[in-house]
Image (cartoon, rainbow, N blue to C red; front, side):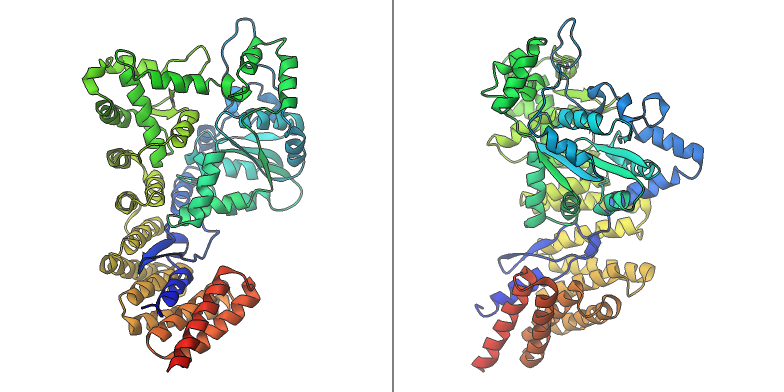
Length: 599
């Protein structure tokens, strides 16, 4: 067994699962974790395809297009406005501050140390990302820089992630514009933005377009870890691909520096809210304190006290739990009404003397003197939760989100959020929950888009890969065969998605030790990729490596050595000597040579 483990590990890391369709990209074999390569990285995750298909139908005529844009883009006055017309920072996501009689709604802006760098970045076209903790002042700094540098540019700000494609269509019609993506994490889950959309928006000459986004540091770290680790997958790979498009990354510190505090002290003479924040600046950032994040967090925790607001605290806890589970859209009221009961019971139930439900909702959503609240309505039947509370919960040692929360969230989630919940569950090594999420997305898309639609087959592939990762190999094989048949009929035998499905089938056959069948499938994939992509394409080399491994398993060591020598040689030329795939092929080759020498 020890002589086979390097080959098995190389097999896992060298194989290609589901191309752009798959959301999971890693799985377990023989106790070893390994990454699986993917192709078609520029193709959108299936949630985007859903959004594009539905929005395109709403944009056939000019009146319909205007209606769609009005629904999906922040447009004061009924049309996209220049940046200079956006005079209230709160309109574009800046947190409110405590009310002060006779004073402006927000205190004067305290210039940050990164302002010169941020403003220089906005001077050229590109993708500028401002990263920092929740309530660190990211959005205010981005807003002030945009107003200073790009006052005449048209602001394109999608009001929700589901209308992102509408917003990007509007942006491409402008010569000079800013696409404003505050809280970028909202656009990297359900119906996500893709790196290809960003590249197309920014490509070419004769215009000055900027994508300006903010992202919580915890979300950035999570995206990077998920893209590199076991529970990664196409959804997280697409998120990482978006981050790879960033041309300027600006970090905003939560705690203000000494020069920033000095500037705040000078402005505090005209606004005592700054003076109050400065008094707590050793523990909290000035923007953080003025957002009332710490105060709302304390109020939430104190709400659990007997006879205080335990039911309201349970509503907030349920909302935070749903966000931690991966639910990105506004949270349905019915979902929080259902879930909060579990959290309330877990803390003592009626012994806490909880208030009536109506009073609990008032407490959770009423604006405090700060102008903020733990929860707020989206104007329909959905609710959002202050992201500061979510980050605080993630930082505190706690149990994983309860299974009941995940299953309840899935009952209310659309396909995109179901995938986000599934990917989050996989990230936390909860494969049964991941299966439930991917199955929910596939079931809904099958009903709405049809069983053989591209979106549905992509979702079905996600489910199949999950079953594969759970070692339910016969179930995975059956799904792969069905997907392969449907894709071959719809797309043709040579289409990359069809070949990726065939490669998935080869993987699962190989793992069931059906080596001759796996060889036949690998050879088919290799032949097509040589013809379509060329002999030196990385995906072709993955197929050649895989073929060499299965030939070794068949005992045809001379043939195996020839394939692996070619794979190693070309990978070193194309990818470099230290690339992980090059190392894999070299290790495979060394293993085959050792086996031949021992005969």
